[in-house]
Length: 116
Image (cartoon, rainbow, N blue to C red; front, top):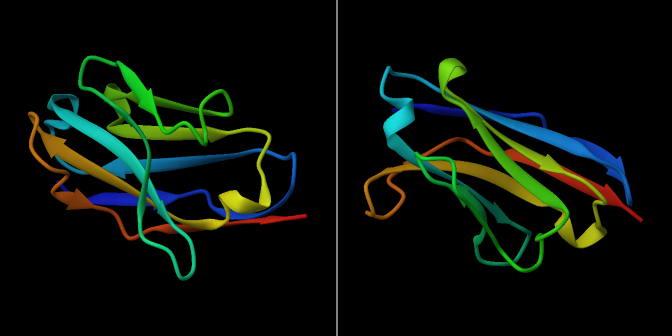
């Protein structure tokens, strides 16, 4: 599966952005999907994930502010980010996995910059 992340940009603290991750292929609905981010000088970190069945899980740092959803008919996953903070500044990546394996497919990343 090929993934294309989009929707990043520059936003002021307290603002919102919605990222999209479009997937190729007809089997999108069978994949678990996730969002990760990497800030300058830091390791990539988990943001959240959605199972093929629609269950969602989040990192504590974004819980209550970020919401992951998926539209299997459009082969697209979303990340709604509200109440953004400067520490959310990072390149955001979407990823896919089959079953309970590691995330094996990655998108190219989209930059999110939150100004204070």
